[in-house]
Length: 340
Image (tube, rainbow, N blue to C red; front, top):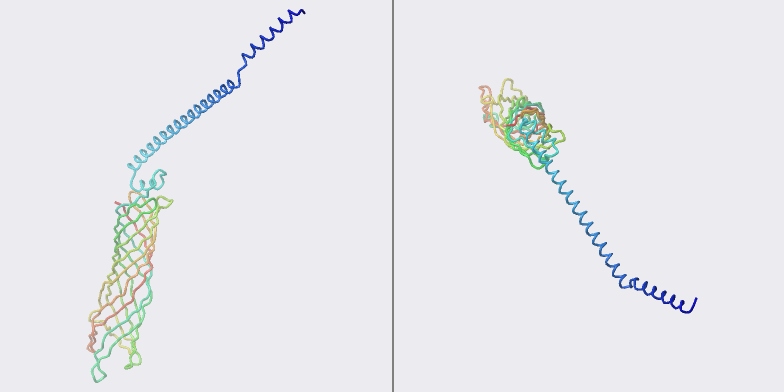
């Protein structure tokens, strides 16, 4: 190779190197390009995120719209079904329907009932004065005391009330009721301590009938069984306690054939009464229902005044006052009622 040729080759190599150097970007250009690429990637990520959010929002809106339409259709169907159903069946539908959460009250109702039970004993006293002549010691006060035994009773009555709904489970009601208690013949032996006689004892029989009038508050509970409603209640009022055909016979000293209340063996008074009860009712359809319950009834103290002793063969007496302590009754009742 000649010197000229070598120079030519060297010049070519230098020219190629310079051209290559001109095509290679500088560090600043590389940094700018990298930054542009990062910005583009960030923009793409933001657009992708926005698209996902918009899709989620659209799905949520569609779901809500479908749910709302379904709920409205369910309500309309339930309303149509209840409108065409009898009251008792509609009540059962309210108890079973998952879309209806409120308890359903009966509104106005009336019922009749009857049953039986037991009556407790009570303290008894008989007060009066026997007008003996002065030759045999003059007037003698009588204050005889004893206690009646317990016994069985029967009763029957009716009630009228109104029930409404409170929340999802409670159904309070206000009612008035009246019932008649019979089969309540109380008997007691009474002793009158006195220094004028060794013994002074009476045997009293008091055929008692009571009419009870009460205002009650009753609270029903919605149960898992739509047709069955347990309840509790209580009330206050008054009792008319009537005694007809009372007798008071003297055992010691014996006075055969003498009833110390003979001039008027009948008396009646009003006194306080209160009760508590618990039971359950079963819907039958068409607004009818059966119910059974336990009652505790308390009738307060009484004070009856009977006529004086009036016999030709017996000393005259004042009217007789018979005081009786309060009595407790344990009663079981069953009945039928109607909503209207």
